[in-house]
Image (tube, rainbow, N blue to C red; front, top):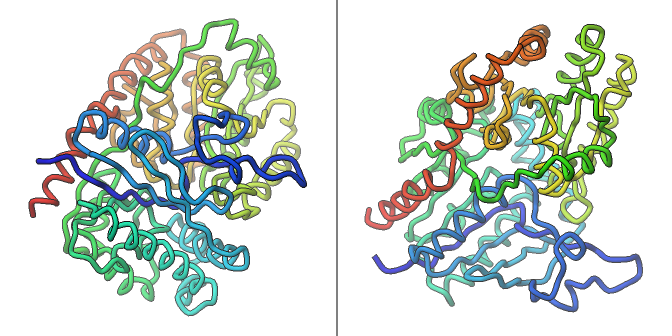
Length: 457
């Protein structure tokens, strides 16, 4: 098969650009040659799966000659129209600020409903709201850009990612192969009846729908989807992670307010109610009397949806304020550290510094932070609502807990805190081996084969 030309579409952009000093012209308006801009100053890579999974996939398939070129389309209001990277051209979609708010509200309504954070009956009339009109406008604008590029480039396949982009496949109106990756949880019981027909129409527009766990594959079938569904575990490139030495780790820890004697429990997640950081704070409060050196570190800030350079939604700030008040009310303010956004190097240092990690989400599409924890040889305590939970044998390569059981996380944390080495060593070694199943080297053949099969169908 000849090398392919592929169109990737995500809501979250690969790169987020700095607005610059107030009153100045942003550098990205002057120069869109990434080699002339400074990472961490002029731009940064978006946190999350776009950078951790989609970008390495594109780079590796271009490097091995499977893909010839990638055109990547994302929503990015504070960016140049195009940005060139080796083998990849980023195309940034801009919609007016007057439309961004409505789009963001509709997108959040879908997100909270699917995650079980809102009453489905209240979300049932979403398709008749002005906000959903803006959501449709954004997707239509994106589809029109993709079609314009297709006339010039002649793509071999379209790879669309996540729920925000679900209508794109239907809007493209092309017989060319279209793949859709659904990254968030899929529970048919949480989808309002009024949504089902339209969601089915959108899902059926794709040649294959990719989900992150066997549980969600079964759920999609239970929803009544008749098309092809493929389970591919999300993945990371282990080469992207450092193992900083003691001195680097100590400097970062001190900068984040972590003392040398602290016993660190690490939660890596954006500020969002679905991530369940409040449950971790409550557990630390209940265990503090028995473990006086215990400190909870909450690493992460808002998503692209909350960023001022993104949709500008306030949910991350609102959730952080709630968490801070929770810590105050429970008397553990001094035991909870909010790091805000951290660089990859700082995050690697925090993984190295912690005793173990916790994924306390109320609902989670997969949970790549668990794989990151394993790669850093740290034990992971994982909500049983996460897709990654199906890779965990409780007590062998991780510890599972029910996030709705107030004592479940406490009990699992206590097991590790009282462990004299045997449990921790077993979880560490087995977790590291399990991480191989979620490495890019394991995923690349499956991804390449999937695209090839869709092309040949």
